[in-house]
Amino acid sequence: MTKRKPPEERRRDGQPTKYRAVYCKEIVELSDQGLNMYDIAAKWRVCIDSLHEWQVKHVEFSEAYRVARTIQAAKLMQGLKNGDVNPKAGALLMAHTVRMSERRRLNLPGLGKGTLSQRGKAILNGAAAGNVDVDEAQKLMTSIAVLAQVDEKTEQALKIEALEKEVGIKKN
Image 1 (cartoon, rainbow, N blue to C red):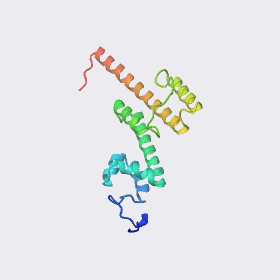
Image 2 (cartoon, rainbow, N blue to C red):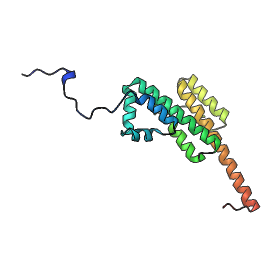
Image 3 (spheres, helix red, strand yellow):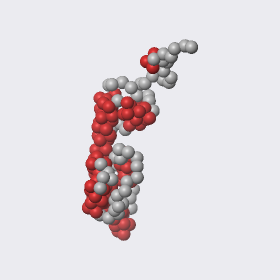
């Protein structure tokens, strides 16, 4: 009977990883330049799943990825505030960019209804009850605040449009 080789001497199946430690610095720099994660993955010639796998396998990359996502979220929020980003598209992007650390259903009564203050209380109550952690609560508060701004800008745009129709102003 032949003796089995130790794991380090066995042949590895699959393609070798394309991960490089320099990607930790690059992902933050590229995010700061305005690239999203899909753009970055394409630039490195890897699929988006590779970025997610690297987060699990490399602690330093996981931290850099979170910093890059924060930069992307900040740029998106600034674009929404300045009116540079379409409010509806921005809301969809925010939902994707500022996401929960885990994909799961949250039990937060009152989160989807009421004023900004009432929604904030729902998040704080959920955090106190242990339904969300502090990081998730902060992300939810940020998302709700941005969505409230988007709602306000959309409402203002609708009022302006109604006034223009009433007065008879035609847009080019």
